[in-house]
Amino acid sequence: WPEAAMAGALGLRLAGPRIYGNVRVEDCWMGDGRSEATAQDIDRALMLYRTACGLLFALALALMVLTWLIAR
Image 1 (cartoon, rainbow, N blue to C red):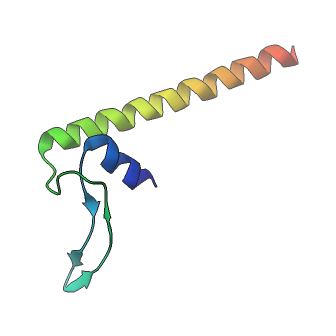
Image 2 (image 1 turned 180 degrees about the horizontal axis):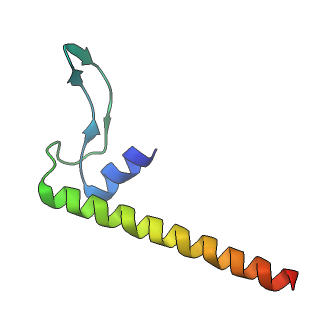
């Protein structure tokens, strides 16, 4: 699900048929966009990832403070 969500957010098609070593893996595409990622797509993905991590950290911190305040 995270890979599919990132594909949708970036407007890319991720996964799909690919080759690992000499073995072809038949897999479904995730997303409806372009199948070729650019350096800008990588930058956008990293920014989205960092933003999500920051929001998760802020939520965890807020819950910790709220729990501490209630327990006082």
